[in-house]
Image (cartoon, rainbow, N blue to C red; front, top):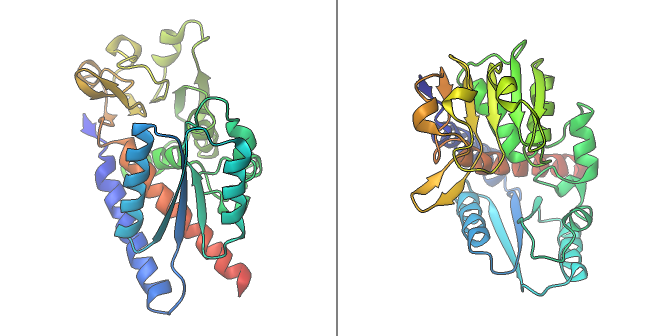
Length: 285
């Protein structure tokens, strides 16, 4: 069994981004990439995530903007901030920190982010590009999973890949990316019957269902590759969607929690910001 060390891969990606920012923008006197994060309300986890994204931006030489709105902000309040950032040419990417407080329509609000600044790849236009294989930017966690598999030389072509979870942010997006790599993909979810029979046939198993230690050893075939997307806070600390202790002895590769997919998500956020910045610069030249 080998650990898929997302922290290690993420640091490698960030070093490349830092070098590109310095050589392509700072040394040439050009504006550096700037990521704007919007956070609505007082969700403690969201505050931690935004702070970590701000720190990551500064570590690679990016600019960072954080817009904080009160818990009782209206949809129009959030949309006004987005429109302001859309018009600001110094801003390369816009990220709306999810989840939003109850009563706010995530899809409606996200639709107002310019596709050219949609760093999470969640606008309908960018999702359309993803699902029609004309990807501009892919959702960060999904593309991070692909890159960690590639880093460890794992061939996806011809493999039977099973994704547990059908969210746009992870499940559907990573399924589309795996299909692009010529894997045969099955998406499972809470209504799937005979789930164990399906997962036991997976060469590559992606767990993104949001249930602590949901995937157990009897659901995984010998020698499988397991990617655990879950981050669940329990009394025993952070655990994934996979029961790591029981599953690890059966598989060939597995991501840990923490230290697996999580660091990749932030690295890919920086990568997408750089890509959007480069596209915007090209359009202006």
